[in-house]
Image (cartoon, rainbow, N blue to C red; front, side, top):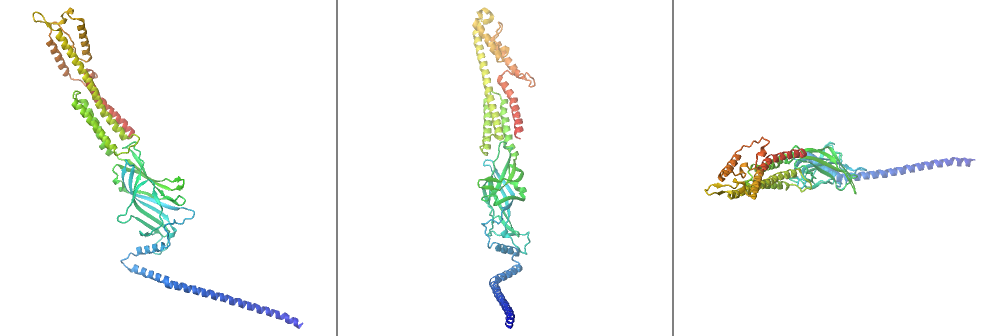
Length: 514
């Protein structure tokens, strides 16, 4: 019984001792671990302090000393120095070959254009020259910073040798382009605390412009400026217009001699190709050609040349030395003038308004030359008929005139028996010819018994002189009937017909092309 009780009371004592020992063992183990951790922490702190004291502290201390020195130095721009120090720290591990990180979204590039000059619009090469400032803006999270000296809306400018990622923008219809580098490269890059990057550059480019010259020189043209990314699709880089996308300086048109800008707008020209969809933005410039230059240099001189060709209608058709050179000189002058103008224009396959005008002027001048050919032909034909009739009259008069035994003149028509049938037939035909060409009845071959050949000639001369002294009434409807010569009739009709046709052509021409 006692042994049982002893065993019964002894076992609990052994269990409590073991538990206490186990607890002490755990406590000691925990204390050992804590000591090891404390030693490690102390060692790490010691190492950090050592690194800080030997590496960062001198740098920090040097920066602090330099900051204090720069701030107190009146000869140094402290803000600029602080900007460059901040940018230098941002670009320590920066790679300009990598696009900014943008998960599941392309880099959004906001663009704007400020046109400062527009010149050299060339119709022959169909191009124009523009000087402008091209600005692009995007967000790069790698360039975010916090500096108590700069507010969140302030920009920090990067120097020329500090490179960041820039979009590979190119202009699709550009022929030639130059960067402005005098006396320093004309561009800047600036960043903001939220990572916004602004890239602005001054450029001069020559762009292609597909011109429609049907109404030249009264035409209006639309010229474009298209730009997009060269390598990246819209999944990588996306372009959009900024809040103020397009601006044109008031003096931009000062170098334009023949055009004015009527309107301008920004648009989109996104294209889809086999390699993907590329975002494209477009600037549309609407230009109108100034007409005053062409009015003074082309239309008025050509109209005067046509009017000069009409002067030949008032010159006697017998003065060939005056009429022919006048028409030929005006025709050659007009052709030379048209060649000089068309030499500055492209050889298009359609007719321009200028071609229609010049062609019509040449045709009117050429028409005056052709008119003189008809007048000269009609006049020479009439003269030939008159000369033939006069020669026949002289032959008949010499054949019919004879004398008797008392030297008195005897005419063949004194007695019908002495005039043969062929002679009467010839005399009647001459009378008909004289009536056809408008000769006076006094020129008909009428012989009386008591008249002589001298009296016949005197009557003919008097009748001609009397007819020349007749004053024609221009307002009379029978005016053209009073003109005996057909050549003169053609000249008088041309004096009024050609100006009337030219005025009608002007009415139709300006109603179509103006």
